[in-house]
Length: 131
Image (cartoon, rainbow, N blue to C red; front, side):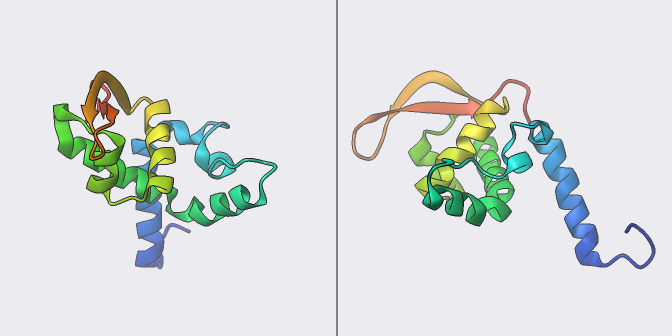
């Protein structure tokens, strides 16, 4: 309820939701992660459990990752660099990066950069026009 007696916590949640909707407008689509929860393999109880466990944190992790891409600027980030910059573990990082990419907020540059192991990895940047 919006009103005179609304708690600061409720106001904060409403502001967080508004910010998330502004940052990730595609999340309201039927195919979105939040519309049906994080993606899971339907036949896997472990996958479904993991999806339920990460659901409350997915939007915060996406925001942290998007901020890391903003800070990286035109240099962009490989997945390894993005995990380190956003301080997100690999199993949580890749799904969040994929959602930013599918939502048009980041894009692969076509460039490759060496990882710590010497392998080559794609470089991603904010998609044109995204602040």
